[in-house]
Image 1 (spheres, rainbow, N blue to C red):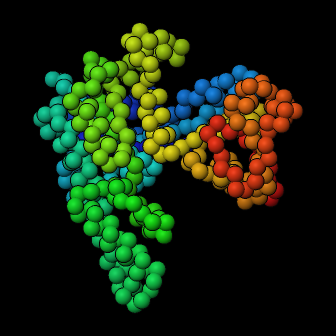
Image 2: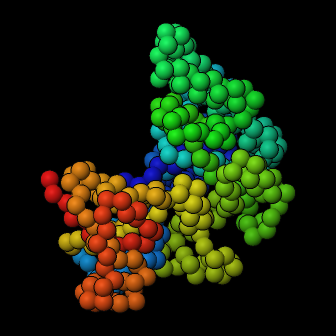
Length: 364
């Protein structure tokens, strides 16, 4: 399985419309709050021209692309952290994801009511972020209460954890997300164990009308400015247009986009932005009848990448035969690459590069 992204936002911002277009999962779409009650889940294949090119050369019986999982989480409202709307249940769903895709309404539509009456991206983003911060403060305060007594006994581990929690709390009370804090290596375990909502990376998506998709309206610029301030990413897509594209046969989709003067679909933009945000790369394996793409964080060492395939391969890792995609394409076949010395033998400390084609050798 790839990485999991939670799609959040206020009610009636187009979350489910975009989710449907991206995943073709058929989530219910309606013009009233809380249409989405349980999170809809969709698995999306990652568009990958390199995988297609390798497949044309290798001609394997089976080709398996990398995937991303999207959760369409119900609309949050002011007071969600205190149970307003369908609040706490949805905040719990967000804890399960690797990153957040925050849909921000940047369109006017007379038949789609805005829950707060007017289109105002700064206000809408602040409402969502405030609710997540309040929920995190509750988490932090509970943790502090639990470890404070132990820290007072002189337990050094508890003391360090308490210091980290107090530092996070002091930032959260200012209305700042935990992802804007720079944590030291010895604090990372505490942060991971807390599962803070605002520690997750965020991709802001301005949902715009088709008329302004290729422009930069004030609304889009405001969202981009907010993203820059917190070192997040921002893109603009048109949910209604993506829904139209999703209904077309695959071979007609790019023709449709070209006719509109658009280079790529919102799906491609979103996945590219998501990969960049999370620092993800893709490597490939061609063992047996299957050519497969795998996703790992940038900086993953060879045994960790092998572990994505099977835990036994990480535990019994011996070495990896590696050739980069560019070298493979230049030589045309794996046998030619081997003859010209382009297939390298790498050990445990080798960091997998984006585009590597790997054959892991292991013993259990």
